Length: 148
Image: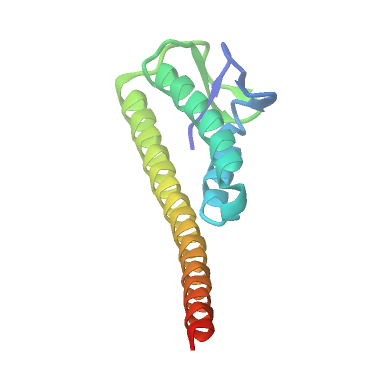
């Protein structure tokens, strides 16, 4: 199996964390999966952090796929098979397909997280509405009891 290592840029800066380019997809895919199960109370912070990291990675990956960086292709992690070069057309096509799948997964997870958050807000507001109704009915009952 052909493995591509990116030498020109070996790290991606995502907020205060440094994510190594090799491990970035795995770490970010894990972040995407975690979006599906976040606590709605922490939605805003978690989603903003994930969105920032993932957006930076997507921009980096687009540049890689567009051939802006030289790469070294190896057959094994230890052995360099070829020197630095640009991605060929087939490799670029694979790169963009991987990027597309990554973005689709991200969009699906963001949708699910947002849907859960909105359902949480809806439940909270319905509970407040029920409380308001109970208070209003109680006040109405008290006001009519005083008139009897």
